[in-house]
Image 1 (tube, helix red, strand yellow):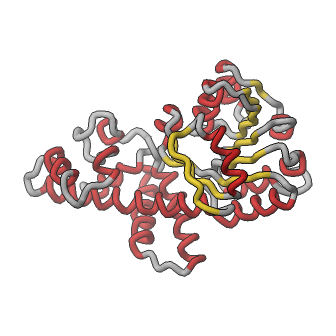
Image 2 (cartoon, rainbow, N blue to C red):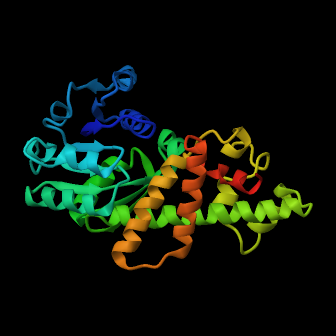
Image 3 (cartoon, rainbow, N blue to C red):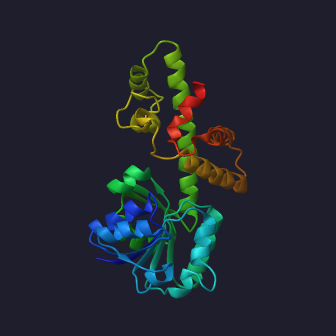
Length: 294
């Protein structure tokens, strides 16, 4: 059993913290929303009055925050959490943020002798609840070995992508590709439907052929094809359009910084931003199909 401070109890962080409790760890939580803390308290967690209080004496500090600016403000500076920790603590930031901020926090942690890994996740709310997330980790080999002990309570696929920041780069690559093949799957299914094909039959054909991909197999975007997919539940998320637009922005930032001319990624970003601006930000990202049906 480990002692864990968990900071950020949103749609992803809350279920992740609960799975750590289920795994037998001693968890202290902090969130700006009292209701989120109360929910974890009912599940068996202790509640701290501040992030600084939560991390005192803990083996691990885990954060799941909205953006890079929140991560930097939480960890860096004279009042940041790194100033309150020592080499007995391993920090795992599971937020999806820009790689530059992840590297900055990682370097500051290393300078203080503190183990740090940027550990963004893939799998969405359902996987967070089920404890089947994929973690893409950036940091030292030593920190990764320590991280695996605690991440195993929240996920089933845990990868060491490289040094600090590498987890965020891997997440950006993955989600850019996810957006591209979701849009492509939607276009193929709509083209088939307009030519008289049953989308379910067409999906089966493509799944048995070279067009097979995750969007078709696990998350089919056409209503009625897959009973448990968001498309068959009025596109209730799932993984929101707002989050996909955010992730595509981060992916394109990585591409620009590294000189990659990613035309497909840029087009995917433009399409999702247009869909978002049309009032669909809170809907599932597979609802991009509807832009083809207007």
